[in-house]
Image (cartoon, rainbow, N blue to C red; front, side, top):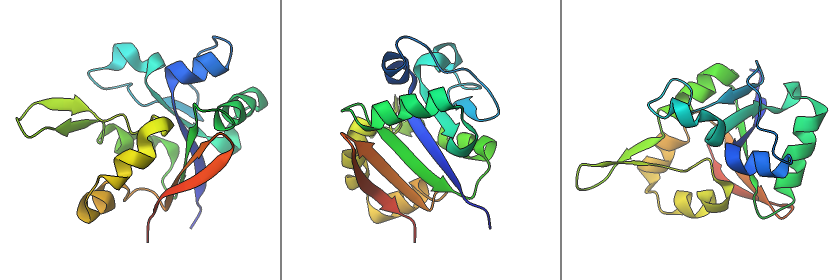
Length: 149
């Protein structure tokens, strides 16, 4: 089984780290909001990068983010990038107790660790099923959010 390393970031924070340059769609970079009701905000929303296939400038920006308080979520998965993006899309909206819907900002590394700790065991298993590991790197420190085992 082949596994892949992916970076998941907030598009606005990425552009800030890249001196205003927004990510560009490619076979190795997917805007997760594409194909959703929030597609018009795709450039500013979550982006998934297949790290092994990214260009040097993208890797440098991700490294800058990982060394800062912005952070990067690192996902290890056997899913191809398109399939993993679809899985992440299906987790964007959550139903609140009053029946309304809210955006789950799991792609923001600054809050992902806390968010995951609030999930019950079954919620964690359902949420992280598409990844072997989900890690967050902030200020140069790597922290495991969920080992899928």
